[in-house]
Length: 201
Image 1 (cartoon, rainbow, N blue to C red):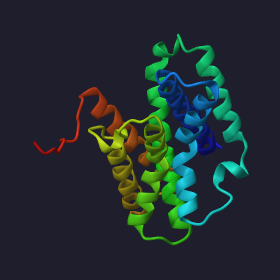
Image 2: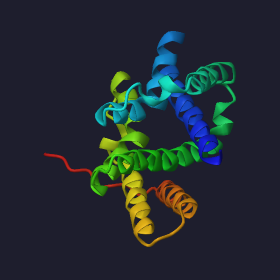
Image 3: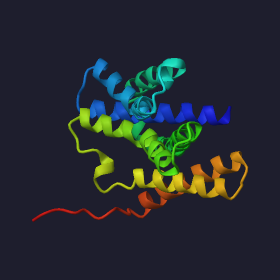
Image 4: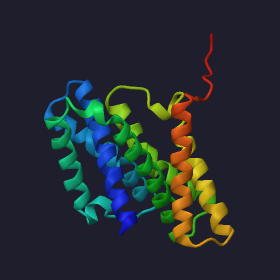
């Protein structure tokens, strides 16, 4: 139940981040909903399609659709106050990042995929909704620039398997994996740590 609750919180936070970008681009309400939707469930949808799991997750649980709709309405109504909530939203977004990483890894494990592929699925689940959002908003996706975002998911996925092979209880593996992702995100944002940019003069 806790895991599902964190998943819902992450979905809500991701949807809000999509709404904020869409409003910056001056989109209409339909455009705002679409951007919020792909931000929240785009990564999971792509993951499920790649592993042949259809209907995809949100089609089997309409609570995700309702949560995204609520996030859109909430963001539009309280758009002037959202700046005060950015720290809380960042934390929820980071928790969602860790939870979605675990969900993707577990999906791969459930069909006996190689650990590297499982980690890739976890990273995709957590970060590719943002990629789709940025592409639709005519922006270079954040994870392809300096932001340490997908890297946190990869390290979280590696942590998951290290602890799994060490024989830790499943609940502890989940907790430590999420904490690892959260810690990395908090550290890189606080100290403004970025990956180097490679360019041609």
